[in-house]
Length: 207
Image 1 (cartoon, helix red, strand yellow):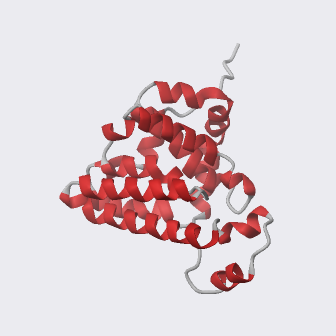
Image 2: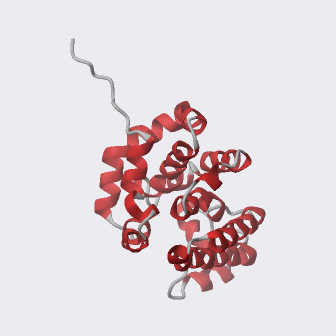
Image 3: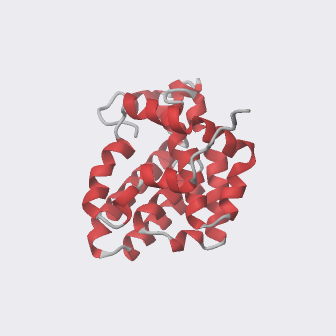
């Protein structure tokens, strides 16, 4: 009888796809920014095809199993929940529905010291759940974490980490000003305030 069991990607497969050589090659890391931060329908389709079943399994309990397996396994779960969700469910409320679980994994991992076992690029993705939060205290922690990362970084990675700190500061500025990310309002069915509407009308608003 054929085995119809779905073979889910491993933590290593997630990290190989998303980070690859970027952990040790700063030039490769710069090139990976296109994958990480540029909207691409092809990337979205690829992630849905290869990681949607894994995303569902992580929500069904696999996340804690991965988290217990070590720092890089935990990071793999965080990336799927915090990053891949935004690709798989782009422009829908589900894009943000995994943020709480990703944050729980990140907080647990930090308490265990997992983040300090990772490279600069890996740590940056470990910390992104804080940057994605609409709670100001999480944004303050994000700035603190990315500031420490920039200070800890090897010389060749320091410019990338300094740029990450700048983005963390910009995210916190928006939460300090509005108490939420206005660019999510339309997706989440929230009405804009007059100040938010003015902000969103300007070039470069949102992230």
